[in-house]
Length: 151
Image (cartoon, rainbow, N blue to C red; front, side, top):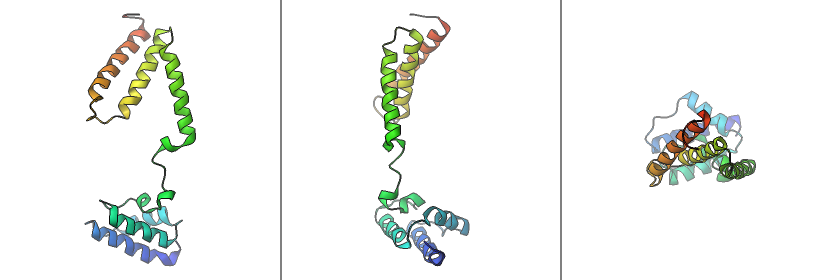
């Protein structure tokens, strides 16, 4: 967008605010949206506004007004390097779980269960069981670290 597009852009945001039951954005908010979207032509932003009016539930964040192919892929899990690093970490964790060293096994078990818990909603049927296993793995980790408890 270019400077002459600023007022039509503001009008689009004001229209969205009216549709979604919000007060019109102040100058600072409009400027923040402008900075986030100014690399796009006004026509693409208007298309994003129309799409959001049709399918959105709440006043949009700037990213929701960008074309779908311009949006981030939904987080780091869509990044090839991130996926490769995650696969490597899983392989290492699996090898560590098979280790004869008690502390190495305990660290790997704790790391895997922590990752599983972080990705799980509290309402998930397996959440309580996973949390119990995680707490048990934490106890085993402390025991291995201090040299106490079962081997």
